[in-house]
Amino acid sequence: MTDTSTTPAGEYEAQFGDYFALMKPRVMQLVVFTALVGMLAAPVSVHPVIGFASILFVAIGAGASGALNMWWDADIDAIMRRTQGRPIPSGRVQPGEALAIGVALSGMSVVMLGLAANLLAAGMLLFTILFYAVFYSMWLKRATPQNIVIGGAAGAFPPVIGWIIATGSFSVEAWLMFALIFMWTPPHFWALALFMRNDYDDAKVPMLTVTHGRRSTRRHILAYTVLLVILAVGTGFTSIGGPIYLATAGVLNLLFLIGAFRIWQRDEDDSEADDFRVERKFFRLSLWYLFLHFGAILLEATLRGYGLGGW
Image 1: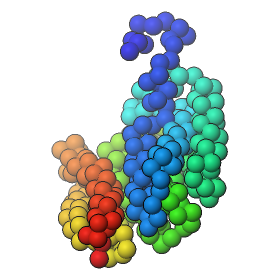
Image 2 (image 1 turned 60 degrees about the vertical axis):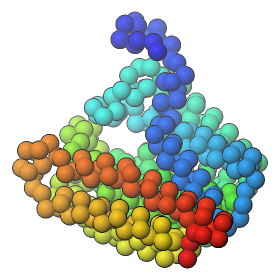
Image 3 (image 1 turned 180 degrees about the vertical axis):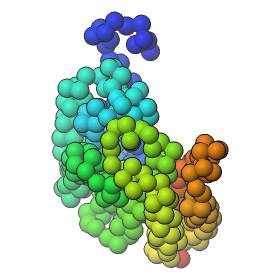
């Protein structure tokens, strides 16, 4: 890896890893996994080659969204400590390059998904890219404290796309998976905002912690968590659920609810005294929350193929 700290300004040549980082690989992992679960949980089997190609193009579309988001948010990324090391603010990738990559990969991923799977899946991928890059990044994020609530839909579409790849249509089950991610997003990001509030203050991003304060944010985390728990556990009694999913959801949602309640109980003196230990623990749990829920859905779908999963 080239050491940019010793490279004269303007002479650094971007490496493959810099362009890959532009596509937010950690976010891409979640997109790929939830889209794959959506496809495999569907009642229609997909040829392995078609399935692999389709998920690959969904991943490329997710990467394109990430590149466009980083291009647009380069100014605030340079201010926030959490994002200063990203490719554009650190000077490793030029903004024009990021825009070109984002646009090119967007077009390629949508066209190729349409050819590999079906036009409805391609249309949903295009809508998801536009929703995240334009509706969320260019408008919602800097316009309203409900940015995460509404914008969370962008990250919730992949399992719907996966389901459409397999079936060519929408279904209640696909939207249940969508709702699981949609309701998880606000408490996940608000927990992060509680111990990263200064970043959003400095960047003038109207996160709920900035506009309404941490006390209100704690109440919102608890309220959304209660709704999420009801949804997640209730999903266990549907056709994509089953005893394994229900047991997994029961344990995870109990822990999640306890964590949200503890966050609600705390005041700022408690949080400052232990460097937001409870909030950080809740955030780390939230990172596992979706993975384990969707892993359980995938396990139920796999066992169902052998007459064992589901109800």
